[in-house]
Image (cartoon, rainbow, N blue to C red; front, side):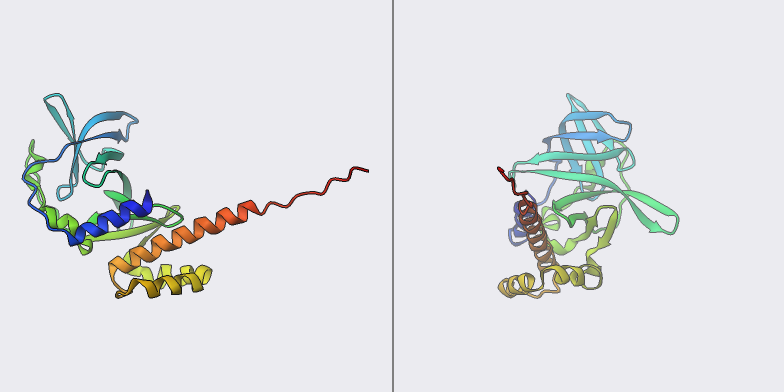
Length: 221
């Protein structure tokens, strides 16, 4: 799922779009911080950073402070989209709860958040802050984060924090793959593809290693 979702999302950046005048509802599951799990229709407002839950004629809106994560099926991409809440360090000794979308899985998990100025939300009408569809399709309209366990790295630190370690493990393989991209390797698009390729190499190497299990010889005498 990791690579197909990432590639699908990135390819959308080359496709035209239209304005999102109304919230789009999709079947999904919402997990609250108190342990409650709500299953039903969900709609995520990227700009307002609010997830809405619809039950009959009742619509409830939740912020990242109230939610541990949610997921819904995106019929456009034909895939399950997953979001988690993280405590983002805004400044020293102060964290802020944010929704991040998971777009790549593996040893280096890739998440993203729409880059924008937070606008005030009208009480009872979070859909008033709808975003233009094209905004969601531009790769560089997002801030990307890479998680390795509890360690979080901003993609802007790719050259200093991620790439050296990736090359140390798979120098030849990544050099060959880089040559097939035919694009600026400093671009967001290229960096995301390189991390995805690294994840595949890492998983493949781990699988091969696990198959090399030493066997003991058994004497019949």
